Image 1: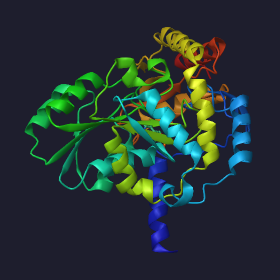
Image 2: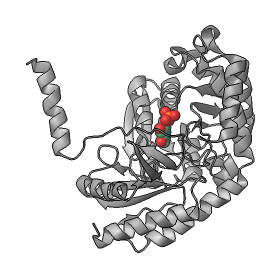
Image 3: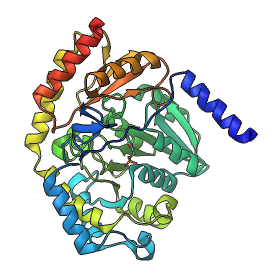
Image 4: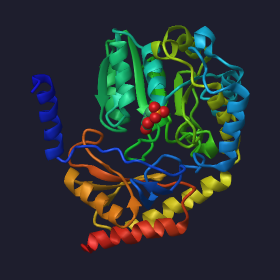
Length: 391
Ligand SMILES: Cc1ncc(COP(=O)(O)O)c(C=O)c1O
């Protein structure tokens, strides 16, 4: 046997033994809560399709039309010859819509992961401290690695602890980085206070609104919801969640956007997303602007789930967003509840370390405007049955 392969297999075996092995399930139906997963019909509370746009027939038609108009590939990176008219239009529409500061400009990238790498590596260098919320999504931290910056993590949503760290900082440059809606907890960062701290301590504030764009602030996102705006804010939003397609944008002062275009390796050294996706995203943006009814329906589902889950033996996270985690504790216990739901035809993923801290493994219940009240009731009934110990 090859010793290198042996070492990998021992490590994989260790993960399996600890209940940390991850498995990809194969979805063989159109995107949406009623899905066929690993060959079985199920009701899913798993994706981030908060407005139900990913499987929307009208958007699918817009995508087909866009493919016929623009082809399926972009052929090159944006700075070579991959920047098409739909990218340009999408960027200016997004900038005007989310407007984290008056006169903002936007740039689009292929994924949110790349967008965060691009922002952090454009703003930070070896002499920069990145002050990051401990529960931030991994890609903001990976941006610090790419920039070779110093990563300082502050306790979750603790603006007081952050203020103390910023006051003590001797770094030449400082960046505060936070998720707006925390992806595994569903709670919202204290963005108004963080924006004040950015001004007091000469820092940038990078806001990752992957889970707020399209949903909060009447669709404009968490900054709009909280009424926060500043030239120091660099806003990232993803387009594969509520927008239902794929990709991401950065919106900020034009000087920030031009710095990303000129210098960010994750922007420069990759093929541009196909223009058909940008064209489809323009249609999606039109839907997001007009989705007040869907957002109201989603809010009603959140309230229904929270009322029904209050009696369960697991801790319901303090969240008012579409992400409603039930904290179970151990990785094996969380997997067992998820498996019990799967036996009842419900798909809710168990989220375990290292994605969340040890001892806080959870079911990440994610609600969508494509769910109905009856879907939420079915999930609550199944959870109650599992809590009672029913087989
Ligand atoms: C908070 C947060 N930021 C960034 C990302 C990455 O975005 P993308 O999936 O578009 O790469 C995700 C999820 O994937 C996320 O939850």
